[in-house]
Each structure stands twice: as C-alpha cells, then as structure tokens.
Length: 150
Image (cartoon, rainbow, N blue to C red; front, side, top):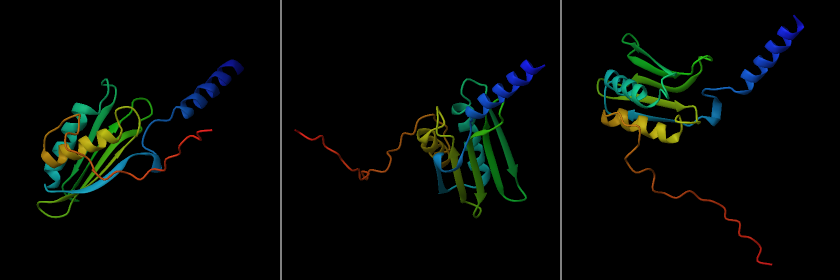
C-alpha cells in the first residue's frame, strides 16, 4: 500500500515537472486586425491548426464559433493534460474586419514560426505550415561582447 502511494506521488511530481501548454509571458503571442469577417478568420485558423499544429495526431483541435457574440476560438489541446498549446481568439470589429489574438506554447512546432504562419493563414486564407512573407526587416539591437585579446 505504501509503495502504491509513493509511486503515485512520484508520478504526480513527474507530470507537474513536464508541464505543457501556454503559460504567461514565456509564450509567443501577437495580435492583429484581419481584413476579413470573423467567420472567414475562424475557418482559416481551424484549417491551419488541423493541417500544421496537431503534431503526430495526438493533439486535437477544438473550435467554437459564437454567432451571438460575433467571435470565435480555436484551440490545439495536448493529450493527457488538456492544456492548450495553441490558441486563436477572434472577435468581429465590423462586417469586414476582425481582431485576432494568437498565442503559442513556445516549444516544438508551437513556436514563433507557427505564430507567423497562423497570421499569414488568416490574412491570406491559405493554410501553410511555413510563413513565406518576410518578417520585420529592422535589426534588433544587441550588445556585443568581444573577447579580451590578451
């Protein structure tokens, strides 16, 4: 009996250490205004998630279209834990524009590349697992530390 309790405690601690899913500030995210209605944006986000964000098929895509609130939600959910590894919230601004918020887990295929690809899929209405449009051309300022030549 004690062995079972100890094994259960070790398993619970191990699962807690292997957390999956979106978490606070460490998850890549972005917002933009899509030049399409919320239904079209939802369809594009769902197609993108089904095609590119399911991993080996163990992850599931859940979608909710709320016509009363004029919005939608697309989630990619991890097996066992039920945590979201990708989330897209869509809200109608008017008949032709939607506000889109995208959050990715930040690991594996749910990274900043997936974030950019999701944005492009919604913008252009074509799912693709790779972002083809160029990113921000402005270089980031970085501090360079040169080795001491001595």
